[in-house]
Length: 310
Picture 1 (spheres, rainbow, N blue to C red):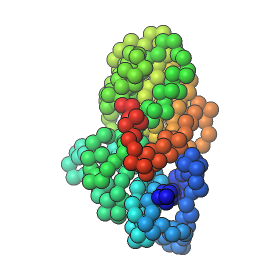
Picture 2 (cartoon, one colour; picture 1 turned 120 degrees about the vertical axis):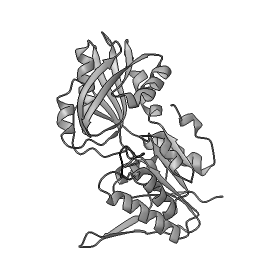
Picture 3 (cartoon, rainbow, N blue to C red; picture 1 turned 90 degrees about the vertical axis):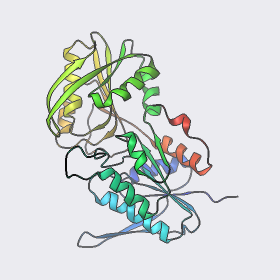
């Protein structure tokens, strides 16, 4: 009988890794991180991983220590003779830096892909990349699954009578259109122009929302400026109700205050990132079962195409 896979976690995503391991039916592997007084740290596996399939779970959100810790865990597993190392990255940080949008800047997503591959990773599992082309930055297989497999059943369960999907910007049009197609609804677009990063200049609504129950779909909410302004615009144009669904709740700056004062009935997010504070309007759906399912199928070399909804 083949040995089962071993699931480990970095410190930043242990809250989620514990749930994934529980769904998998086995305890989370033991990792100890030793910290030094100058801020340096050293992660180590406290059990034998020689010849085993090792899954390391860690989102790479700020601070950059989370990315460095993942790289060090991959390197440690390679040096400990793991058979195969799979990085499970629920939230792939730096994904918004996927191209040169102005001169003399880094393509950080490609750099991170190179670092992960150089460290020894053999496969990547991730959820709702900000840009699909990031998959092409890797020279190893990437299992890119979508939160739609979690969100769509939840939306269907709400039984909203006049449902319309919406995108908070033109960049998310394909995502909103895909949800609209699956749910057999119309969709609208909020067209925004930025004066500078994280600051919106103007926004217009393209489409009719009069008397509709509108759901805004996005992959990342950072400062919540775009999503709350889009929600307000939709409400002002006669929408009956407005909700938002977001995969990765970055929620930086005064995002929680903006959400608390927003027109939204609720904002539904996943647990790829830990929330920094409670908010009555935020509802969390777990990705644990989704990732556990992907891990099992990868281990047994089974298809995961049914998890690709977009």
